[in-house]
Figure (cartoon, helix red, strand yellow):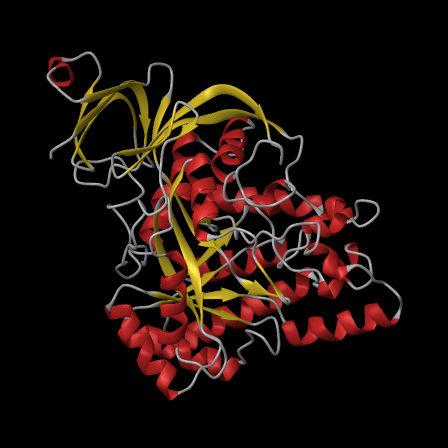
Length: 467
């Protein structure tokens, strides 16, 4: 049966435009837009009408970096695909791209199949996969070609975590050469893990075991060095490069320099680096463990470079790196040894609201908010214009957003399956009111009306953001 919805009277904001318009949705797609209170808009007829007067109408967010059910440090990320995608919807995100993991000694296909099995039939919103490549060999390289053909078009490698996900420079170069041929995009965790492990060992030997030392040993210079090395390896391979969770001034400078040289090099940062700092890692007792992630939180003075990078487009995307571990029973694994604290923060529900607050604080324009949270991640990872915009033919992933509502972020009210909030007590202005995923209401007037299994796997084309 055909279904039609019209959203009336809102300010439609995309990466390129702001217009008071009515939006007509038909059979899960955007059918038309027309300026509000005009004959064209008045002619829209629908089964359901949503009044967006005084509200923003924005594309659903695209979070291109999540880790649901990720095994790490002897435990698992606490959000399942069901709980994590539901929380994402509460926060105005309608598509996530999660990371399937190749285990050393196993094939890419085995890892991808395992992640399909975790996600299928459970997600509240649409999802795709990147592939973590942990074991580069001739068979892996052949599999990369096959995965690109079937819509898994990005591959993550790690210069960190020796013995777990780590790839050496030769393995990285070989994967980059392959991606240069097959159109894939290499995503890089850029930290010098070999050097960091030496500093971890030395710190523990000195009795420096508290969470704050996690930030002290993972030095900004080692992020910058790895970022530089990844850029030059990609240049040698003739491949594009996307550096994940950029946190340090010096790493931003490496990206800016490469982009000034005309290289296809891109950078992502995350809300935790924009809003949190080493002050959180140093909270008394063991509270700092809540903020252990890698790359680590940096001193506050690094935030200015990240905001500037977002304004100048030396950083293109804000994702969450959502990888939650409960404080009780999970983060506590690292009491007495910071190196055993599971790395990761919850945040998939908070990204859109925190970035709207950044608009109010003068860091970003409204259109740039949508660009870095919706449109560019969709373009970067081959989902545009199906996702990331409000335009005829696009999926009807639409958020009615109240820019005036005030809220206090808290674990008491969030929907992520984790026992703390990284932003506990923070007051922000702006809140999701209604969320449509392919035209189906998932959040309706601040009530969850979605269901597990509505979200579908979404194959992706290759990067649409290359120069």
